[in-house]
Image (tube, rainbow, N blue to C red; front, side, top):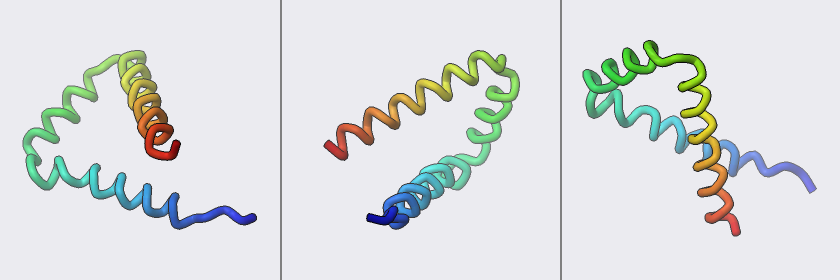
Length: 65
């Protein structure tokens, strides 16, 4: 039983589309967001990243079960 790369590549494609929406629709807002992120403490960024990963895992679990 081999690994099915199509699911991983489809997920990567969706991430690229979602990541590109904000700079396309609102480039000035994206710049403000990046400036705000640059001023955040590393601990805050890690917490945001952890919460984002946990939400993603929860959504994936709900969709796949």
